[in-house]
Image (cartoon, rainbow, N blue to C red; front, side, top):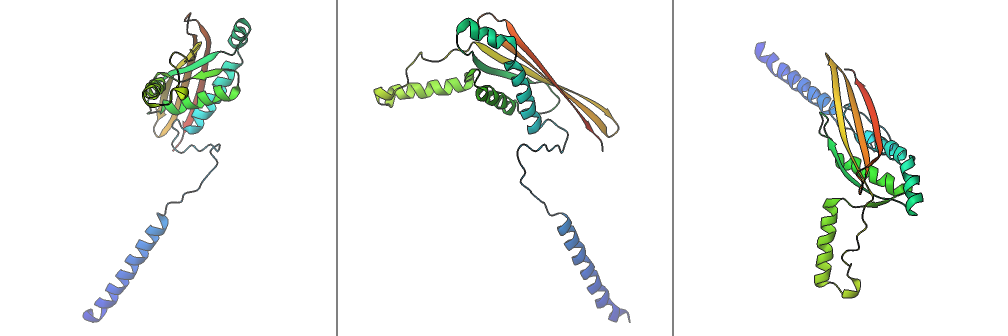
Length: 202
């Protein structure tokens, strides 16, 4: 009797094992869906692309609607030239400040109210290319030295954060501070501040 049941038991065990594997495989399938880039998706509660875009839009819009811009335009008869400098991440997270900087530069340029020049890192690349042109390019097409546009104002800033946690629930607070400074006088002409508070409940 025992010998007769053994193959049946083994067959059932094999069937149950296969069913379990199929259920696990079906349940673990990853689903990927494309969504509009303007759609806010917040999975972890950390700083993300939506925060970067919205903060940049709001802060640059505020900067461009303050008295410094009209004052400069009236005194000089032209639009000011702006350079976006360092935005230092002092938060508890690894935040790619480069994305935030690019978002702000886009808002400046698309406004049509200011002119924007490259930061120090990119200027060095352009200067290397200009030097290369003087060595190898047709003289009629060579970009000339000492024709760069100087900036009138520099935008700099910091990103800070605080975390308040009780058991598994957290409140994450972000604060972005930006300063716009006149290049010749070191006068701060605009100070911007934006705060974000996120609640994460598990």
